[in-house]
Length: 269
Length: 218
Image (tube, rainbow over all chains, first blue to last red; front, side, top):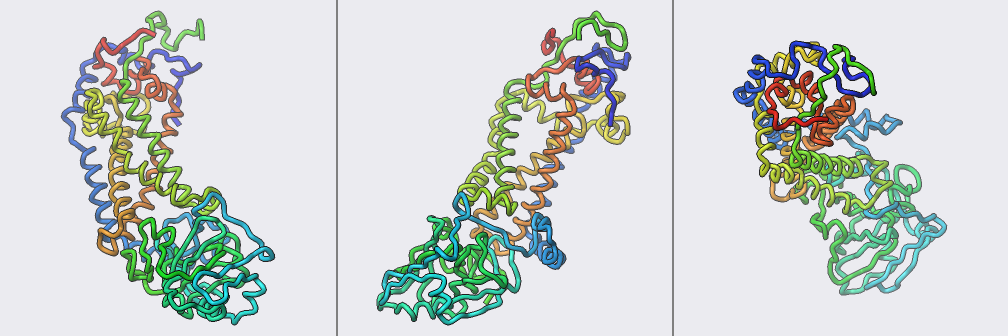
């Protein structure tokens, strides 16, 4: 640290060096005027940074992939969660479009299924548990780049639920609503008939936590994470696709991993 | 403090101040700083998990972040209307031989090497920030308007944007730290004026050259 005895008491005092007493001293003048003739290092810094940035955009994917490979084992065994602050890596990040994560207990939970169905039904957790159960271990890929490998999922396969309520002819799509009161999602009926689309009641070996969208969330294995709506509270069969929240904000409605949103991630199904 | 004589004992010259930053220049600094603050705060909310969950409203926060980011160069461009600002941009661009000497010396704070209006550290900071603003706008645009670019670019842009954000945070914190350590430098940006004695010590070449018209009595 530099000592500044000339600043004692917070008052400006004369400079300690009597050779530079405020009046014009010729070498000093020369120095400031030299600013006008110095080399344009500033411009080179700015242009250099722009060049590096552009190179990073074009080739950064390879660096990011290498970084992920290094950090993946670290993040999987990091009890502090601090490694999630490193801009890379494969751990869940929690997104919510409303002010607070909504909360609903398993006891109070209800899932209503209506629209173009034969038997509109409201399911409790016990009702869902009574339906055939499906388990999956699949990756979770976010459209913003992070991916969590080998996540364990369990719940009711959406086709089993649809068979239970009966789909009317004329239904071609599903709209999902959530008890945060804001989020919506969509699938075509064909997509919803896949066996790897779950109404998930379990995740990572236990009940779906509040932050992960519990007690019940959607999991659409072959698509980007925004399709896997958290805090699921309603399924409506519709005659056409009604784009969901992020899809109204520019993301693709058909969100196949690696084949949409301009991304080339490895498929997750 | 009344009556306290200074070290050299030549007390009776009335203290004077030099105009360091005009009103326009201070406006450019303040608006850019505020906008950068918004960018960093919203970035933290978007990026740090516990903050994301505590604050929520992801779409709105993202919107604020993008708008604030695109606005970053606006005060700089408006500032070009000010001659004082344009002159200072020229000063920040050029590195004189005394800048290099200052940068290499171990006692650069002793005032032994009279530097111009900006020392080499301030020049590096300013040029880094300008470059960073442009890089963040470039990469941020690739991320936000992803469908217009080759597939891998978005990942690359995210990579650059993330790491550059940490670099910017470090430099901004360093900038604030240096300013807080030096109340006269801080006051110079707050009021526009610095004590002539401070200018003599920290920016000897500039102080020697600054005209009488820019001096006022305290």
